[in-house]
Amino acid sequence: MFWTVTRTILEGCGQAGKLFFFTLLFALPLGLVIAFGSMSKWRPFRVTGRFQPLCRLGTRFPKLAAWRPVSMLTDVFVWIIRGTPLMLQLIIIFYTPGKLLPQNPWNNFSDGRMFACIVAFVINYACYFSVIYRGGIEGVPAGQREAGEVLGMTRSQIFFKVTLLQMVKRVVPPMSNEIITLVKDTSLARIIAITEIIKAGESFSKSAGIVWPLYYTAVFYLAFVGVLTILFRYIERRLSYFK
Image 1 (cartoon, helix red, strand yellow):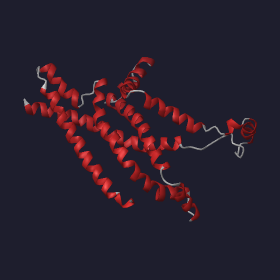
Image 2 (cartoon, helix red, strand yellow; image 1 turned 90 degrees about the horizontal axis):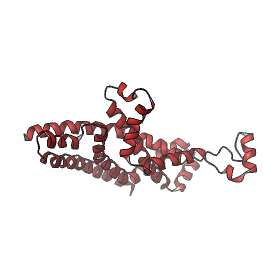
Image 3 (cartoon, helix red, strand yellow; image 1 turned 135 degrees about the horizontal axis):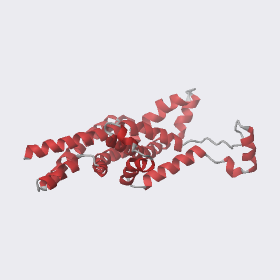
Image 4 (cartoon, helix red, strand yellow; image 1 turned 180 degrees about the vertical axis):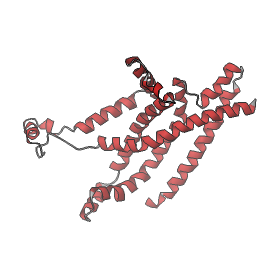
């Protein structure tokens, strides 16, 4: 019985691992894009803008000249995602299209439930990562970017050779915390009937009337988190040359 339970939970680990991997694969770069949107300084109504009709509006209404639409819309989106539970976002993303359309579009995929779950997780974690990225970028002293400009470096060179290298050191500790939280949040996939680790263990309480497999799932979570903890400690040591 023990090996049967272990094998079943390992299959759940495969589903959780798939969700974990694809969430990081897409949420990490998307979070950087959202961070750039949040820090955008584009002001279409500023007096020195290229579009003269919009500039006249900025002259008449000084507050309008300071309006940054990209930054504002990005901040509102991040506020909504961070302010609502991931469980609710999973339910909305998976079930709402089926309510509005004759057929649920997620059913057109071979593994539609997992695809919808990945979409929900990527959006949620990208917003959290964006805040961490923004803090890391803004934490780099402005004088170093100005020094790069004095040396004749382009904006992209300053970002990749000056800002990015120092940002990585700053974001690793909070990012590792979010990634470890992601491991445990994969258990929410059971809300849309995905058999992850906990659902795999819980299934035995209904079929065989035993509860210990549910507690046994903690071993797999601890092993997963333990490997990540060792990995992030190694990364932090490798980045210690910034001290």
